[in-house]
Image 1 (tube, rainbow, N blue to C red):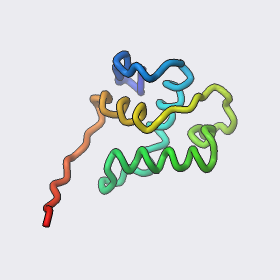
Image 2: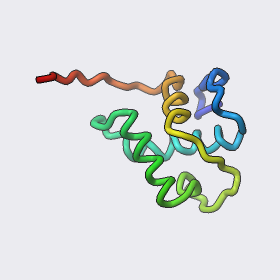
Image 3: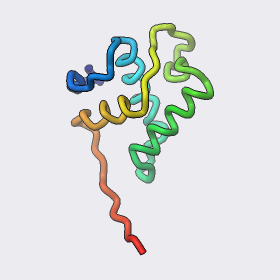
Length: 98
């Protein structure tokens, strides 16, 4: 998968069985930027994106309206793709347990 000038290795994500899933995940990563505020975890961002898809349908990922060439994916596949996106910079937040 190419995301801009960056290549994301998704060969090892066995659950991705159709190119339309990968296409939808690519758009979902772009869509997820609206939730990336430095406060939310990747897990929470994935949950929010999937909640939007559940409510509005897969076509909410595209700013061009109805596409018809997306296939459903799970949060696992989205998170697995994000974890392989080497250009993505994340910061681990340290929490204290009481």
